[in-house]
Length: 265
Image (cartoon, rainbow, N blue to C red; front, side, top):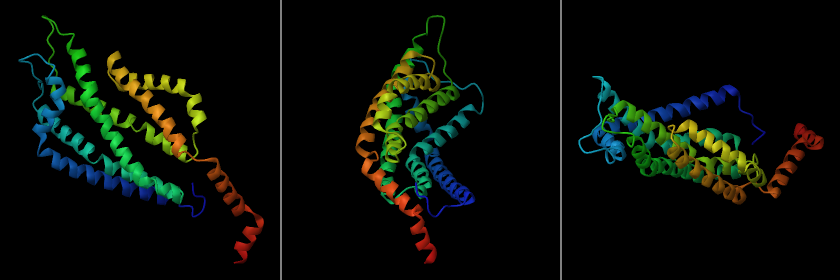
């Protein structure tokens, strides 16, 4: 992190406010565009469920305004996913002032990779986890028990999982960036692998429905992503030579003779 040209805390708050406003505007625009295709979007979102439902079954809504608000939420979710690259970009740009010049050059690749991993995580949840998870839940139906999922319940369930998978797939980007900053190292990641696996299964149990299948579908990719993170940390992590250069730079700035020279100037 840069130690010179310290920015006041109020300036950080102002920067954060501006970034958030840009994110809200982007999501709002995405919402307006998505609302024009709300029925089609909801059909696509519910496709993994309707494909495993019995013939003649369908989703229901139990309250008069439920369908209307569900379409609003679908449009908002779609707008959020569409503008995810913009949101991720604003997040990394907020962190940019505290980075060195070499690290700032990595921001564009990081933004692109973060967007790809987020969208990839959501697609993994949609195409892989949803079909197996819904098939598992509908398996409890019998002659006396008939599943009647509502629009509201399904949307809440699906949106939670899609966003959760998108976020957890950011793991390699976050760990690699932390390694680049020198916050974590490859030996540290390898040493704490067993604790990471325990954390993955615990987090999966909290983020997913209470069934083993869905938890495994989230925990196993996280384990693979963790190994990818170790590779990324090894390739892009801060090298000892760079750490030595930064220490020499800090020492030279704190040298009394250099300070005296700067004061005389």
